[in-house]
Image 1 (cartoon, rainbow, N blue to C red):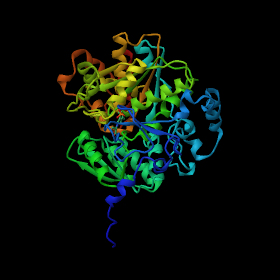
Image 2: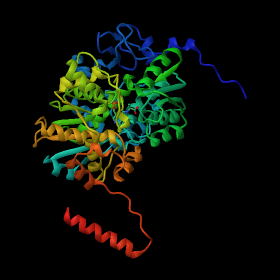
Image 3: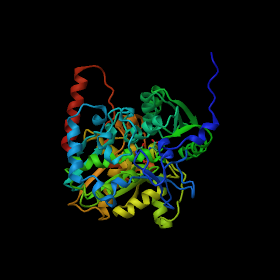
Image 4: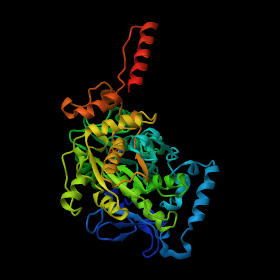
Length: 483
Ligand code: F0G
């Protein structure tokens, strides 16, 4: 067997987010049509180094494209022109048009060659009404944008198609991420489709088996590290400076560009009438940042006439942003030792906290936290709608309940919950909940116990007789009538 090809440290210097951009003459927009701007010092550059941090101050970068702003006058795309183009592409059979991300490519960085896109037909996710939750909360206009209906079962696919395509265009062989499970599943799939090798760093014993099994099946080199997510991400940031490995965490601004399309598609589904509120879960805070960026760009381009309030909900045990805003006025990050059964958002040191803080300020959104009991209840309620989601997504409904009580959301207003992951992402949580094994008895107060009990549907083991099944039906019918 030939020895493995060593990873050349020399190659690292040549790597940028966009190799062509690095070669663009100064003062002229690079071929991708976009530049990198530091979110703290505002420094603009045509290329980014491997860790996607500002070479001056070390803060995060965001992608900016002069074509998307009014400042460009007549060269800016018109709102009605964009709406028509995006609608027409729905009739097309070309792979880029079938993607619910690349269909909106006017608001994405431009690939040199659209045939280079790595796509699994991501996006195109449904917007569901939630009639039972609507009635329960007294909110007539309650919707769920279900990003769990993406090809690998989470919202990560919308960002991954963009970032993985740029990784391949830039000539990388390896892509890598730290993950609580969904990013790794998505990255592994897109790498496999694009002929790239992928390296996954996950916290040992802290991610669901479903997500881990996806990464294995899609062929990733999967390392379970004896640390938490924050430890994995720290290590990855060092790794990408030492080896020619392209990082696909949401620190990578190309990921956030793709994730913007969630909001564009949502507004298109609402016929460009903005809802009053959009509510998202907050973990590493990339998704909220991406949605906020999309809302601002759409507003800038007159695609929408006003901004919805974007609110972020965290688990009480992983509430770094909540504490940062309440205890430090959003000025410095307060990190926490994260602990929650919603493992997707078990993050204590969120990378994009500054971007998310800015989005909350600009859109006037709120930031709340919810308990483990509240998450479990909300997840079962979304399940009972025949939709389902993973625990991290359910924080949105639990948070909405709180925001309604506080009067931040008013009964007549329209609300969209962003469900980030599919029910089947974490069957362990679901089984434990229905069997009554999820929460310690002390966590359930008398009133919440009754509410949770009503939502539980444990499997029933019976003798294989007709009598036994009919008796069960009758019992169920009786308790339904009493409810
Ligand atoms: N919901 C789900 C299902 C997630 O997987 C994540 C993050 C979030 C919400 C939070 O999104 O980080 O953009 O604020 N999962 C990452 C991962 C961290 O590695 O899969 P965020």
